[in-house]
Image 1 (cartoon, rainbow, N blue to C red):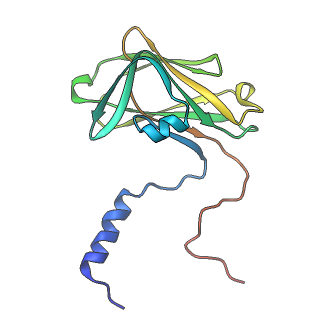
Image 2 (tube, one colour; image 1 turned 120 degrees about the vertical axis):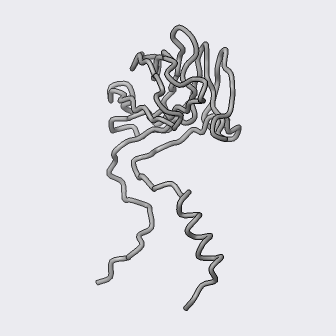
Image 3 (cartoon, rainbow, N blue to C red; image 1 turned 180 degrees about the vertical axis):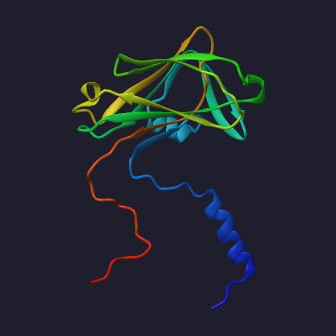
Length: 171
C-alpha cells in the first residue's frame, strides 16, 4: 500500500510535536490558558502576563496559586517550567515554593539560554499524604518570579498503565 506524500509528510510533522507520554504525570496546569487556570483554581497577587516564544507565561511580584491533583499515598514532585525572554537572560529571579502552607523550597533561577527550563521540587509525603489535591504557591523574593509557563504533579504509582500499546501481546 502506498500513501500520498502529503499524508506521510503530515504524519512526520505531527509526530515531531506530539509530547511523549509519561504515566507519572498526574496533573498539568498550563499558565495563561483560561480553561486550564479555571480548572486549577488559579489566583494571584501583583501578577503580570506575557508571551515568550509564542507561549503565554506569568510572573509575580507577589504570588501565584494553583490547585493540582495528586494521588494520596506516594511522594509528589512539582515540576515548574520556566521560560525566558532574551531580555531576561542571566537575570536572577528569587522565588519560594509553598505547598499546603508549608515552605518547601527557596530558590533563585538564572536562565542561561532562552529555552524552557524545568525545575523539579520534591514535596515531602507528610504534607501530601491523604490529599488528592494540593495548593501550590509560587511567591516572589526580592523582585519578579521567573516566567512560569507550566506546573505538573509527578508521582510514581502502581495503577495499570492506561496507555495503548503499539504491539499487543498475543498468546
